[in-house]
Each structure stands twice: as structure tokens, then as C-alpha cells.
Length: 419
Ligand SMILES: Cc1cc2nc3c(=O)[nH]c(=O)nc-3n(C[C@H](O)[C@H](O)[C@H](O)COP(=O)(O)OP(=O)(O)OC[C@H]3O[C@@H](n4cnc5c(N)ncnc54)[C@H](O)[C@@H]3O)c2cc1C
Picture (cartoon, rainbow, N blue to C red):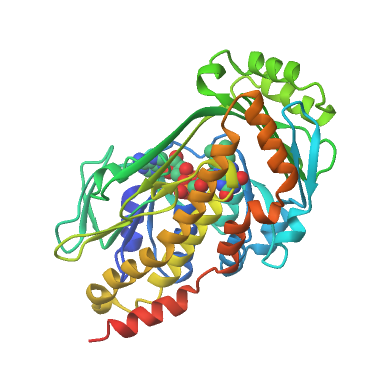
């Protein structure tokens, strides 16, 4: 669990660290990094803009890229106990008929687990044993010109200095806007939808999606309940969740009890979270001042994903793990000026192409999913009947199979940077 702590208390705990890190954003990326650094005896300062973590949350399907991360943090068994296996995936036609069902869990099993978990539970697991964080706080200015980054905070008059500032504040990162990360490419599908929860019903290891003509309905199991996503073109969602759910119900006569219950859940939710389906890609992940100060963008702040391949959190956690493991190889403060920039450059060199490849896969699938028209639906369903899940997820499976080794990368870099 995160423990609400003042900024001053966190700065005090960090005083003797040989590497002083500030992490803005207590999401999957920021907390994975914080947990790893803490395991190596450091005390990264964690700030979170929200006043508390009380948020209804949403479901995450996590690819096996997270297994190594969770193993390293010693929480893999707990993760399995608090999540649900995603053994099967079914694809439904725009009329609601199941066109195919695939054993995705088995397909991925040679690489690890494929599980559904609530975001809030994942964050609790990442902070097992407690982790301090300062809530209601964000970075208002950051100056990377000196030997350390000088940071000003909202709600505090006292700036502080850090060896490394990590912008892990999500897809709409404001910290990214304060850093010279080059061009920030944004993609807006003009689609969006509501996220809600439904009681468990039917096969609890089955994720299902209906790609409609101007709508999308997905049901994803987590432990003890089903996460639901209902969306469509943003301009058409303005009628509200209940009316939109009624429209989908009328257009898809083959929906069964499970998906009808999912529609009812969204319609009955007094305040479902609306998720605009956009993504973002920062040109540079690492910023380095002339005198050595460093900052990075991490997770969705570096590359925020469309949901289509269900890999955003998996890649965010992998990037954080790579970064944390590589930084943990810095032996002392004397080595910092030599090793920190070199390790960050190597981290970006390895991770950015992997994350951007996964993001590209999500974009390609989005082109197929977020389009409307009866002919488009027919073509899509014909393709879906023919193409195997292995082929559709091929690039993602390859990324999972080729997960890099952070220790080898760090040792290589340290050797090359030897005086
Ligand atoms: C509805 C939904 C379903 C998804 N499903 C999947 C899935 O099935 N599989 C998958 O792999 N991925 C999925 N994703 C994507 C996944 O959630 C993200 O890729 C992942 O959470 C990114 O983690 P992050 O830590 O970078 O960002 P976030 O989880 O967004 O965390 C960022 C944190 O920073 C905080 N913050 C924001 N601004 C500031 C600021 N200025 N200063 C300080 N803190 C700030 C936020 O409050 C938040 O706590 C889904 C996303 C959504 C929205």
C-alpha cells in the first residue's frame, strides 16, 4: 500500500542515497520503478497528483512481459492469487454471434502467464510492504541545466534537486510538457468508451469482444468480476451510456446473457469512466543537461497506448523494470556522472524500439477495429475467420519472447564507460 507522506519527509529519507530519483506519477510504471529502486536500498521520492488513490479503477490484461518484473519484486505468486487467467478469447460479429474462440492462454504459456487484474490491486501488490508517496502534488517546473535537475512542486515553495527526474504521469503527462523531449506525436481515433464492472457470469477465463458497426463491446475477467468496455465514435457516445447500450443491444440480436449483462452494467453505472481512445509517442525518452542533470519519460508518458493489443501496462512495467535494474548497477555517487547518462542512453536504445513496435501493433489493430460501415464489418469478420490469433498477435508474441536482459545491458554499458 502507498503511505501518504510529506514531501519533506521523503526528501529527508533520500538524503544519503547515492542516486536521488524523483518519480512523478504513482501508476504501474512509476511504482514498478520505485519498488525496484527501493529493493536496492534507494529511497526514490514518489509524488502523485491525485489527492488519494481512491479511484474505481479498470481492468488490465497483462502479457507475460510482467512475469520477470513481478518475479524480481517477489510478488509473482501473490499476483497469480489476485488475478484471473485469460485462457480464452472469443471474437464476435457485429450482430453478436461468436465467430471464433481461441486458446490464447495456451498460445502464450511457453512465455508465461496471461492474466486479468484490477489496476488498483496491481498497484497494491507493487507497494507490498508499504511505500511512501506524497499525494496532491505535481511538478510545476523542472530545470535540467545544472549538475542536478532543480524541481519546483505545486503547493510547495521549496524547490529540490535530483540526479534523475522520472515523468511517469501517464498518457496526458504534464511533466512531459516541461521537458525537451522533442516532437510529441498524438493519434486520435475519434473513438472512446465507458469502462465499468459487471458481476461474474459464464466462463470466467474467457475474454470476449464484439466489433460492431460503429460500436465496440469487450468483456474481460479479473478475479471475481468482469471488466466491461463499451465504446464507439465519440460523436455518437454523446447520447450517454444508457442510450448507447440500448442501441448496441438493438443492433446485435445474437448477444447472450453475459454480454447483455455487460451492457446493463454500463447502462446502470451512475458514473462510468470515459476513456478517449488516443495514443501518444514522445520522440526522446532521455533528456540530459550540459552539466549532467537527467530526466526521462516512462510508461504511458513516453508512449501511451490504444487498448487494441492490451499491452500498454505490460510494456510500461517492462520499461520501468529495465530502467530500475540498470540504475541499480551504479555502485556509488562517484560513478554517477560517468554511468548515469550512459545507462539511460542504453535503456532508451533498447526499450524505445520495443515499446514503439508494440504501440504500432495496437495502431494497426485499431485501423481494423475503429471503423464503421456494413462492408467494413463484413471484411473484418471475413479476415477474423481466416487469420489465426497467433498471426494477429505475432509481433507482440515476438516482443514477449525477446525480452531483454537488463543486467547484461548494464554491464556492457559500464564496461564501455570505464575510464
Ligand atoms: C480502461 C483502460 C484499460 C486498459 N487495459 C489495458 C490492458 O488490458 N492491458 C494493458 O497492458 N494495458 C491496458 N491499459 C493501458 C495501461 O493502463 C497503461 O498503459 C498503464 O497503466 C500505463 O502506466 P503508467 O504508470 O505509465 O500510467 P498511469 O497508469 O496512467 O499512471 C500515471 C499516474 O500519474 C498520475 N499523474 C497524472 N498527472 C500527474 C502529474 N502531473 N504529477 C504527478 N502524478 C500525475 C496519475 O494520477 C496516475 O496515478 C488500459 C488503460 C485503460 C485506461
